Length: 265
Image (tube, rainbow, N blue to C red):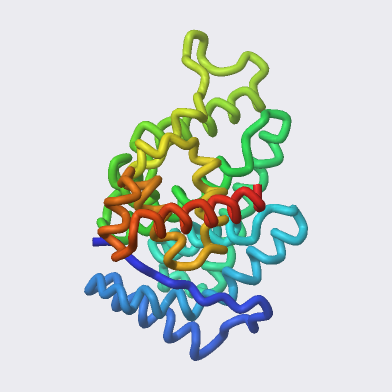
């Protein structure tokens, strides 16, 4: 079971005060007491405007992806949920603002430090997704998640998660310490980061990210055909049986879909 939380962000929010804060803090107390995920969702909705505003401001200033910064900020919001102490007299929105701001600034600072080291854009995007998945699993499980649990949530092999962490740790060391990583330690291998459920597709994760985005431009039937053919390794005949189509029809749809995708490459 996974924790599905949708944060509605407002890019021009008013700072929540008074009643919204009281509602948020009441929801936080309820969540801590009962683990009610609806209370947590409500808490995130009430503070989604802050999250969106901070992410957008830093995205414009840094050029980093708004979506990536939104996910990083989400981790800060989760940390605020776990660390807020109402006895200190601070509003939850104020505390959440500081935690979100700090998390995004930390992410951007690391990105700036690591600029001399070639770390692909897709790796930063995947790292943001892993960070969000980790925060969600911590809320759901009440403990730090295992690598295997994070891997299942983001659809990457456990080895891929470990390799991604090596990329970050290794580049951090090489950027901040001229002596580099520990002598004898194997260098990170980005090509080892693979999909969890579609190993036979045999594409590096950066190609899979591009393909998944490109496939959103196809019709539902076109996506289904390509999914069965290239994700599940079914034959055209098997795909036709699944979808109630002839083998020839499947072949035509696949050819047309691939032509459309090739035009986006």
